[in-house]
Image (tube, rainbow, N blue to C red; front, side, top):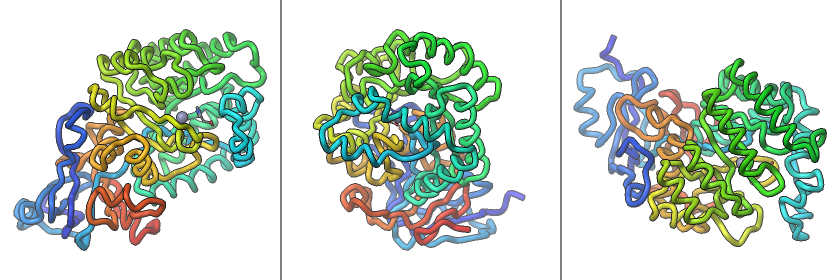
Length: 426
Ligand SMILES: O=C(O)CC1=NCN=C1
Ligand SMILES: [Zn+2]
């Protein structure tokens, strides 16, 4: 019967709705967070029934039965955070690379020596599906505890048909049994595996002729991503892989201009990728090509921080040029071993020069656009999924300002309390 509200969250000190335009936000729109003092959210069947000032919400649900009331005690409420770029499923860890990094050995040098991604490939191939699942679930629990309610997860540490499918099956199983929604991305073109060293053209053929069709047939990924980088996959190789991926119906993503200005941003614009990632070395013409095609720029400040780089993605330029900006952890065992989107908030402000409002836009509605889910998540509006975070904070600026700790008090996923008092609900 339609006279019931399942959950009413009230006494919200500051309710950040992110309501606004349907398309990816950029320019001044990134500062419009739709904040409402003394707010409330009424939830039914996992979706938002009413949202706004508490008085208005209570008037809209007058006469209806409210099954559960949740007192936010004057705290800050935002949409569930979205992490649109992670390498969640992987074996092993790479803390041994820290000493190399401290000695100044560059990331691509470690990879060229057969370390980096390739050492994670060895560990991932050696792990069973169950071991990968158990390890990834621990990280996914941590992401949820830090406020993430939807997470994109890439393959790319298998680098053979069977091993790539194994990783994607783990993503699917996590999506089925964990409160956090997972969005799978096939990234067989993450690196050229040892057994194809010096034969990258043949490996590209394996990706195109064997992996893409099989991943599609088994419905194990929505997107295809490629690491377009010096010594990994060239612009031409990236173009042929993503062109084939588009023909198979995958959405397109591209790790672009992370370290060298390869022209990855231009390629992302040319192909109409849904998003392009990293972009530290992207040129103005590359960013213009992205703007013209509406490509979302996913900036990864935890990665450039962890790589000890002096330069970071030019998020301010992107926002002023009209390129929509999203943020992500880039969680992976090499270049960004952190599950904390709250750390990314601080780095987004301090290293990318974004405001707290722009950071929240980048971590909610724009991140939703980067994974093609903006019609169901990313803002607290009537009819959208009831995914939200209750933070122990008085306002938005407090989150990036008070760094290195977890401010999450509670998380609601599809109308269900999945974290309360900072702990996973059973
Ligand atoms: O290093 C890794 O494992 C992940 C990565 N891919 C591209 N950049 C970093
Ligand atoms: Zn990445």
